[in-house]
Amino acid sequence: MKQYALAVIGGGASGMMAAVTAAARKECGSVLLLERGGRIGRKLLATGNGRCNISNRNAGRTGYHGAAPGFVRPAMERFTVEKTLRLFEEMGLPVIEEENGKLYPYSLQAAAVLDVLRLELERLGVEIHTDSEVESIRRIKDGSFRLAVQSGADRSEYAAKRVIVACGGEASAGLGGCNGGYRLLEGLGHRITPRLPGIVQLKGDMNGLKGLSGSKFEASLTLKDGQKVCRREDGELLFTDYGVSGPPVMQLSATASRLLDRGRKPVLEVDFLPQIAENALIGMLHRRAKARPDKRLEDYFTGFIPKRLGQCILKLSGAAPLSRLSGSLESHEIEAAARLLKCFPVQITGTNGMKNAQVTIGGADTSQFDPETMESKLVKGLYVTGELYDIDGDCGGYNLQWAWSSGQLAAVQAVDSLA
Image 1 (tube, one colour):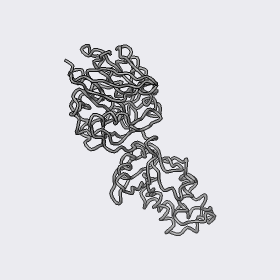
Image 2 (image 1 turned 135 degrees about the horizontal axis):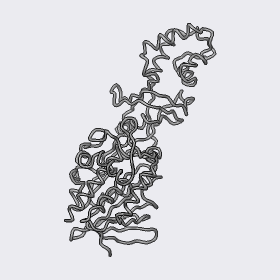
Image 3 (image 1 turned 30 degrees about the horizontal axis):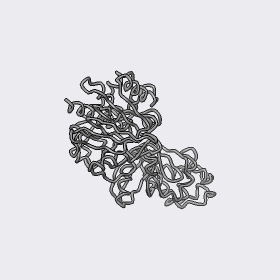
C-alpha cells in the first residue's frame, strides 16, 4: 500500500487550495487528492453565475455567520484577500473588482479559475483520483490514517500521514453537494450541527402577486421578525411563481432560513421606490390623478412604474375595478397605494430547498477544532476546511475566500506537523 504524506478528501475550492499549498512545499512529500465526482472543481464552475466571484475585498471577520463566526479570523488574517489574489496572479489569473468589493477573474469566466488550479496541481505533481468516494477514515497506532475508498465496483485502501477533509456541504447536490464529509467526521466522533439552505431563493405567500411572476424591480428589501428589523438589502428583486429571488433576496436568505427553522414567520417588506419618501409619493399620486382624471385606472401608473406592478398595487389597495377613471380615486385609496409601494409585505413561508442553495448553513461544530490550525481537537493529524464547518458567509465572494483561506491554513499546518 502506497503511503502518502497528505491525503485531501474533496476536489472543491478548499480542497484544491489545500493540495496546491501542500505540494508547493518541498518538505511535504506526496499529495493525494480524492474526489467522489467525475471531475474536480465542478461546483466552482457555477459560482458567480458562471463568472466565479473568487473573493471580496471586504472579506474578513464580518460577513460570516454560525455559532462562532470569529472562528474564521486566524485563517483570514494569515491568508488574506491580498495574498489570495497574489497567488492567483502568480498562477496566471489576473482579477478585476466590481461593485461592493466583488472580485472576479479578468476573463469573467469561472473555467479560467479552475483551469489555473488544475494546471498548478499538475505542475506540482498532485495525484488526483476522481470517482473515488471515501467511505471511512481510520487512525492507526502510529498516528497515520487508512482511508477506505470506493471507486465504481472497486474498493481500495490508501495510507496517509495526514488527512484534510474538504468535502464541502450539502448545498447544490446537482453540482456535487453531499453529506459525505459530515458522515466521515461523525464517524470520528465529531458533532455536526443541523444543516439549513443558505444563499437560496425564498418561498412566499403570493396571494394577489401571481401576475408579477417573472418581473424584476430595483427595490429596497427589509427582512423583519415581527417588529424587529433583521437585515436590509438593496438590489434587483425578481418575483417568481413560488416567491422571490434576486441578489438581495439571496443575501437575506440565510437569516430567513434560520428564522424559519426556529418556527418564526419572517416578513419581507419591499420598498419599490426607495428614492421617494411616502408623503412625497402621496402628493405625486394626487397630482397624477388630477392631471389626467379621464385616464382609466388600468393605465394610471403607466409611464411611472411597470404596468403590471401598478395594476397589482391598485387592486390590493381596494381601488378596483380598474375600468374606473383616475379622477374617481379617493384619498384613502391613493394613500393605500402609496403605502404598498413603500412597504409591500411578502410573508416568507420557506426556502427553495438545499438542492437550490449555494451554501450550507451549519456543519461541523467549530468548538472541536483549533482555529489557529484547522486541526481536530479529537483526532490529531486530521484537518477540516471550508463549508464543512458551521460557518457560512454572505453572498458576494465571502464563502470562496473562506474556502481559500481555510484550505491554505490547513495545508500549511498539516505539512509543518510532519517535520
